[in-house]
Image (cartoon, rainbow, N blue to C red; front, top):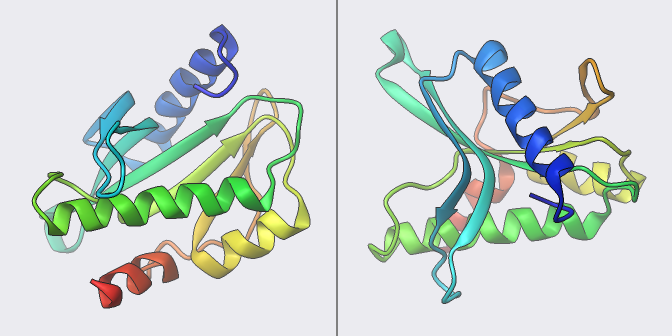
Length: 158
C-alpha cells in the first residue's frame, strides 16, 4: 500500500487480478512480508506473484510488484529503493533468513514516470506499468526472457 488509504489497497487488488490474467499466475499474495538481510523489520511486498516457467512449467519465477497509487510521478529513487530491497532479500536467502527471492521486479502506478526513473528501470531490468483506470500499459523496454541486471549483480557479489 502506498498512500495509507483504501485506494492503495484497491490498486493492489486490481493489479493482482490483472497479473493472474496476464501472466498465468499459480500463486500470489498482497501485502506479503519478506525478510531482508540488513533490516530488522520485513519488507512489505504489495503484490507477489509466482509464475510457472521453463520446460513444462517445472520452474517458477517470483515477481515483486510495487504499486504506487499517488499523484506524484515515479522518481529514480522509487526504482532504486525497490532494487535495493530485492537485492537485500536475495542476500537474506543466501544466509538462510528468507525462503524465496524475486526473479523479476515491476512497478505499477496510476501516475507517470520521470525520465530518470525509466532510464534506471531500463538499466536494472525493472518493468514499469501505468494503470490508466482501464488498461495496463508497459512504459519501458522490459526483457522478460533474460535475468535482470540487478539480479545478476547481486548473485556475483554474493
